[in-house]
Amino acid sequence: MVRPLLMCFVLCVVSGSSKPTEQKSRVHADAPLSELEHDDQQNFDYDHEAFLGREEARSFEQLRPEESKRRLSIIVDKIDADKDGFVSEAELRDWIKRAQMQHVYDSVEGQWKDFDLDGDGRVTWDEYKNVTYSSYLESPQTDGDYNYTQMMMRDERRFRVADGNGDMVADKQEFTSFLHPEEYEHMKDIVVQETIEDIDKNGDGLIDLQEYIGDMYMSEDGEAEPDWVTTERQQFAEFRDKNGDGKMDKEETLDWILPADYDHAVAEAKHLLHESDSDQDGKLTKEEILDKYDVFVGSQVTDFGEALLRHDEF
Image (cartoon, rainbow, N blue to C red; front, side):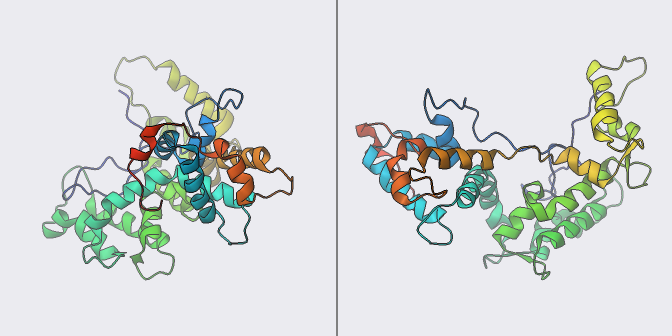
């Protein structure tokens, strides 16, 4: 019988729609910036989605060229973080990363009011704890499938890491890193620690082959081992256990669950810079970007564009 790959416990709802933090996949490889083919000879649709995010790119497709340029001009001002009048490769990279993180920000925004009980724009540990574990706190139980005391301690530990100044009060950015730690560099160690704790059954702080396979697959009596399990055994020996000691340590676990072999945002930033940097000075002016607006955002000449719902920032 196959068990899903889970970063933490499979958790039931504790109170309302909230639940203790969880991750749904062991491996957090960067997703492509777009599912579309990147072929500039055909169109710039891939670049549009990479630069704006999928939903925003679709809205721009329906705009007149002059409206696309107007909105793009506003975006350029936001990308220019140091306000020096130029967009650097690093600023372009950061913007693309932000666009691709929008689904994470939207998810946190949708939950924010549930946890910010006093409406002060911050979430304290007590607020999160009281919302997430209210039923357990009101009537502690020691039996059942879940050890809520342990889960609460684990969440508190992660909250402390996400809380930059240690006051146990999270602003929206800190709370986002708490709920989605795999997306943040300073949270990597806690993601690795939680993963090892989930899989490590003998308590030695390492992941051996039996524990690695056991996290994905539990055989039933008489059941033949599937081919994919055999492949995973080979993967463990050849790629996961880099030092050949039969176990994965913290560094090897990090390489497994948070691979850093390719940065899509960096590659796209370099590509957009190459396409638009007419004077080849390694940075972009607003004029250079607007001259190549079709590479960044695109548009179609259509009367329908003016009827689209406008976002507040535009």
